[in-house]
Length: 344
Image (cartoon, rainbow, N blue to C red; front, side, top):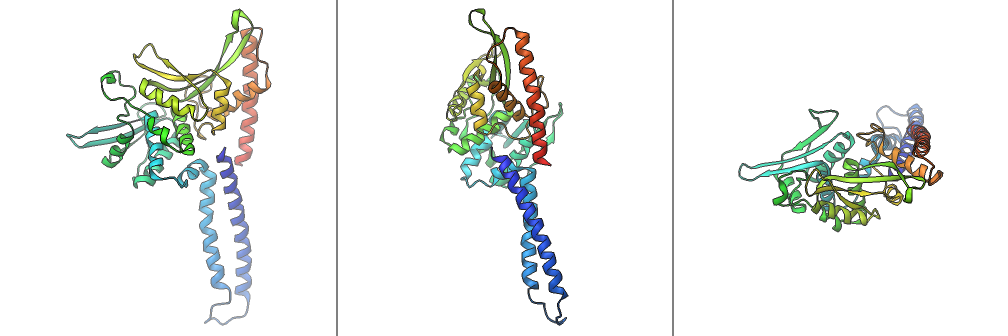
């Protein structure tokens, strides 16, 4: 994954700046300690000031790389503006709405979600593309946030990519349907990062224990789901986009909501593909279930560790559950320790 590499690059830059500051301090001391006329500038004084200004300007950059490596990596990509717009549109399809009412000149974009890091990415992208200054606000329910922007140009650009961003309106079957087909024209790198942002918003992973064929031994099977309560038009385009990053899924309809469903995979290969494309966005967390509050990437890696180091079948459901929980808990402790060491 790129984020740790950028973190370490920031650490190296910070250490280099610190060492250079010490060298410059000694050089300044010896320069000022020499005999020179007070009316004249000592030799080398201006050069040291110039190098010091460059050095101190790099220190905040090193701090940013360490604090938010993915965000800073994303914002510095040399992609055309249209590619960044595709990323914003993908985020809104997964966790937002785009509202327009031309008769009253109302244009609004709203992005929802519990992960503040995703909101920070969203507002920085708006600033980069449109110069829009926005700030996430606490939502009235739970530990959730909302970022809303009123800008006609933004709304018009987004509607050129998808005819609507309403994904869960029960009465919207007769109108235009949302689509992520614009992702199929994105470059491979943009496609990958856009999908990671969307999956980090509405994707989930976990496991189930199932009996083998003909009532045989029990097996632990993973699951990956994405795009809950989305219409077929959106699910189909999502499915094609995910297939381009080697993540194969099936469309499953929710019986409670006519014509709406989600994408699902039950294979370990899907989880491997998700990890190979970078996994979830760092700092995003599981929002429900037994692992609520845990970083999604920790759960992803723990599941893959279990698959790699444990048996493929078990004599009973209880044996399978004990094996997977024991393995996951061990992986959580090990991965959390490694992560703490990397950030200290």
